Length: 386
Ligand code: ATP
Ligand code: MG
Ligand code: MG
Image (cartoon, rainbow, N blue to C red; front, side, top):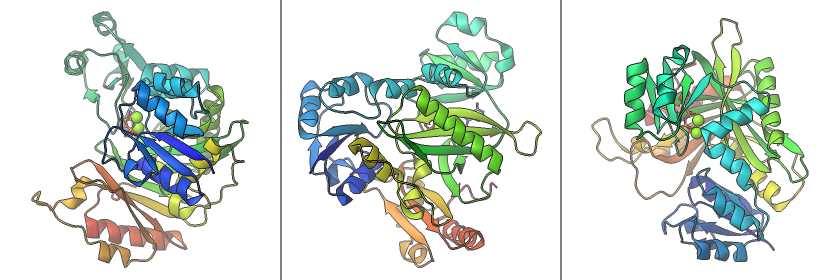
């Protein structure tokens, strides 16, 4: 019996640990937080910083192979681990995903279109900026997630002020695109280069955070979904990626009925938009993470039910006046096809990802009907958008 390790102890790590343990693997988590969601359910929990030499040595001693559950794990730590054990995804792929500047160069190399952008690293870059990029979104090159570390700017003055606010760190300015929709593709690539993928899912964001994922036939125009799949495969091959990869896309309103496909960013790990696979597919994205890490042949994927995923942020644990409340799970779970996933986080804060609900059904009309009922019961946003 082998032990699989994961860098990071958040909810993605926890769901990886569950999938690995179900298949009989032992697990080890490295996360400094003694209360981390994954650390608390793992066989081993190394409680050191992500770049601590002793912690890394301990983790590689415990494990036969190691993966990651968040993109901001120091690439150098993955390199250190890789000297001892197989590590997937590799340090180089994670480094690309960690830095929007390198990420965008990689998209160009993969032959996939991204939003028009400029790199802003110094005052001169600001002064010589192509104003056709405005209005735009200024994003820090590193460490942003859930819409944090980005500011919408309408003109040059706002841009200069925003860059000051972001402490003059390296940034990219992206042109603000008129979005028709957003979607993502999740795939797994094995050590031998074999790729399996789920069909593209459509995502609705509220305040920069994923709120709803629609995963069923007809959620996107078929030709667009096929292009997203091909683009995601090209991006994975181009960096010789191993493991589970998520590629996020914008569907831009270019006047055509379908819209145009533009890549947004990649996540070198399972992704929130793939959580529906846990209840709607033959194998979940976390199963694929286990398979690819352990070097097992990747399974053929089949989605057996249409599905919608609703994110449960800390806000659900508050009433309209901001008072703490317990959501009415009884009522939610009494509805057909509802699957509740809670991450075991000890404190609910607004905007914090506490869990998700997967809804499955035999047909799309029943799926949408149940979803509306759940959203109403819990006061969840994001369904009014098509
Ligand atoms: P994540 O948690 O997915 O890593 P993030 O902080 O990296 O989020 P992005 O994916 O860059 O943020 O942007 C968050 C959301 O903001 C997007 O899903 C989209 O709704 C909107 N957005 C970002 N860039 C643009 C753009 N260039 N034009 C229009 N909308 C955008
Ligand atoms: Mg991101
Ligand atoms: Mg994103």
